[in-house]
Amino acid sequence: MYHYKIEILILSQNDFLYNVVQSMPPLEGFAHQILLQKEADEAIKTADIIICELVDADVLQALQQAKTGAEVVLCASAALVQQLPAKVCQLLTDIWAQPYGEAFVVFKLKRLFEAIKTVKDRNLYRSYLETAINSIPNLIWFKDVRGAHLKVNDGFCRAVGKTKSDVEGRGHYYIWDIKQEEYEQGEYVCLETEEIVLEKRKTCVFDEKVKTKHGMRQFKTYKSPIFDDEHQLIGTVGIAQDVTDLENMGAELEVILRNLPFAVLLTNEAGIIINANENCSQYFSVDRETLLGQEYASWKHKNLFDMGEINAKGYADATLFVNGRARNMEIYEQPIYDVFGTAVGVLCMCRDVTVERSLSKRILHNANTDQLTELYNRRYFYEYMGKLKNMVQRVNLFYIDLDNFKKINDIHGHQTGDVALIMVAEVLRDTFCESFIARIGGDEFLAVVLGPRDESELAELAERFLTNLQRAIGHNEKFAVLSASLGIAASEQLADVDLLIRQSDIALYDAKRDGKNQYKIYRS
Image 1 (tube, rainbow, N blue to C red):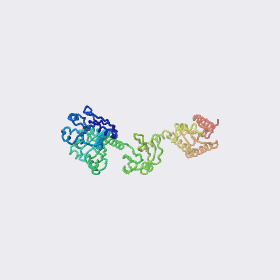
Image 2 (cartoon, rainbow, N blue to C red):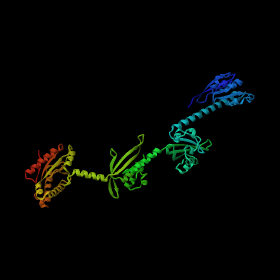
Image 3 (spheres, helix red, strand yellow):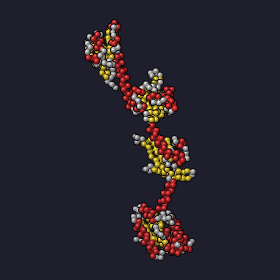
């Protein structure tokens, strides 16, 4: 709020007017500086209000030096007023006919002070308006009902490339440098939206394309009607936000979504799906329009099965059924944050990794298994045993070596030898059905049995294997010379894998030395 000091100059031979003015309290925001003089001097040039009871020629001449905007009141008789020259009358704000009393003076002065306050308020509000609209980067304009621009802000001038003096009072075609024929053939809607606002007599929001000095621009425009004190329409006010860059970003996002090779979903802060690319339609057999507006959590529950927890990197696996066939899906899910760090939605990407996972499994299987027998290989045996190290559980290791296997290769050939190895692998699976089994050499195998087992249980397993092997050998006379020897070692808490293998190998050596086709249990 302003605080303004009014300098009041009283030209009079007595102090009546001075006393009256002195007794009147200033209006809010004002202070009075009162000066009483009996002749005119330089004070005339600085006074805001001049009340003059001196009417000689010199004083009237001096009044013409009053500053611009000063309020000049002449106190004189009606007869004298009739004789005032025109140039003096043009200087006057008011004439007080003498004689007058205190009430009259108070009444006149109060009106004068209120008039000054009205001017100051108006100037203040104009300053408020000018400062406010010019501080806003958006385009702001005021129009009359005919469409002429009455006031615009700096943002508007920057957009059209014209000054305020060049814009104010002019119409749409001139300001935007558009010919009427071009307007009628183009996509411009500014004038039509003005008519809509005037007709509806309420604030309306529009998306408008406008040709500017910087090319075609897209605006989000808010337009409101303006009424006078009798509620009659006198014009409109508009605020336009240039959203061209945002629209371009939206278009670019749509292009990205459309060309990504996997399904993408976006939700709002309420968990409602607000955007999806066409791959979603192909993945989930639903058109995009049906997908939009669904609750994201409910949609996931209906379409993605066996979905695990989202890990720290935002990924999870799920299963999607397409035409009754299961597909492996990799789900990537991350929250979307605004500039204040508030979650405003979720990004979800779904990628079909069925072939990829199948290939990975095949590669992993080939890396970990023996190609001929499909048992685990030596490399994976050590990886498996490494996981058991220092675990609080008993590990029982069976070291199996075939007897006379070289004779089969020498007599019947390596192809027959391969058939024998496959047969032995099947016997091992049948005997050690829930255990880890590996082929670690040409005719050497290992079986790992976990859990507490006494010697009788270990012996029973070994004897079962030998019995099953002889039964399998009996079906093929080429394998008649074949048998197996076993060495068994155990560790209550595995700490050294190689030590356990050496112990089982020692037991195996004892079995071979004592005649083969038998088992031995290692004892320290």
